[in-house]
Image (cartoon, rainbow, N blue to C red; front, side, top):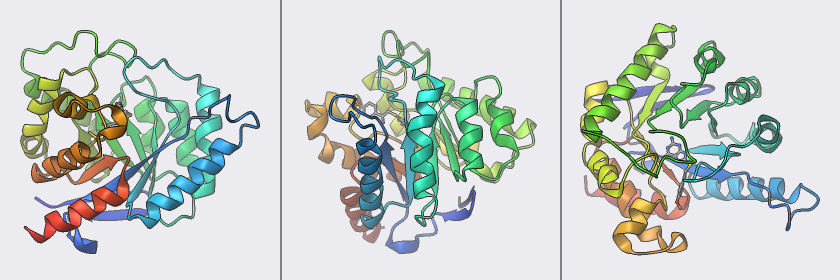
Amino acid sequence: MRHYLQFGRFGFQLHAAEQGRQALVMGILNVTPDSFSDPGKFRHLEFALSRAEQMILEGADIIDIGGESSRPGASPLPLREELQRVMPVLYALRDCGKPLSVDTYKPEVMREAILAGADMINDINGFRAPGAIEAVKDSDCALCIMHMQSVPQTMQDHPQYEDVVREVINFLRQRVNAMLAAGIDRERLCIDPGFGFGKTVEQNYALLRASRQLRNELGLPILAGLSRKSMIGAVTGRPVEQRLAGSIAGALAAVAQGAEIVRVHDVAETVDALKVWRMAH
Ligand code: YH5
């Protein structure tokens, strides 16, 4: 199954095996100022831009800009604050030559980001917020629909499913249908099982093993984000700063299951791993 994904100004023939590899690498760009080390409030912007430049040199295909930490237990970021973090980075990277994704679930941020030229909206909430679908429908940016049970503050407290794979597929199908019903072109959509978002370690791996099934049942490309997550830590026994090898194995496992896009912190290492991986296929 080959997919075309419309990415705003860009279009990708996924699995076209261009550039010597078969999956696209989305580099994670967190824009989170630290008020202690950043009293002038601009160093975080400089830092984010140099990190983006580095990821592009390392072979990132997409840059995913996020202002709000969606880690378990994290509290929501006020709208104004999120805009103040994300928008300057988006404007500054506008002409970097790579598609720009914005990781947000707030319809107001989606609208602003699209006006500023974002090529993808990556919503951990699956476009469930009132007004989210309206905010994105009249554009041509790609849309990543992710599954999450509950909300980031409490999602890891008691993840509960009778059949996690079936329930994630049903959720994603329902969201895809809602977006298609709003008139959104199918070529703009990709889906994501949402590793770590209201799932136990076992449930995360059940979803990883079932990724091809998700892709085949829904007929849409898969974006997978496992980089440095607790599902890697749980198996390796490693703290977050020592999860590189485990994260690469996770990315390759997702690609083996048909994932077209992998969302990672460590771009250079993942690109290398995918280059070698591809030669064996
Ligand atoms: C995702 O999977 N994840 S933000 C906890 C960690 C490490 C990393 C240390 N946005 C995804 O990256 N968007 C995030 O433990 C995402 N898919 C998509 N589409 C969380 C994150 C992280 C959380």
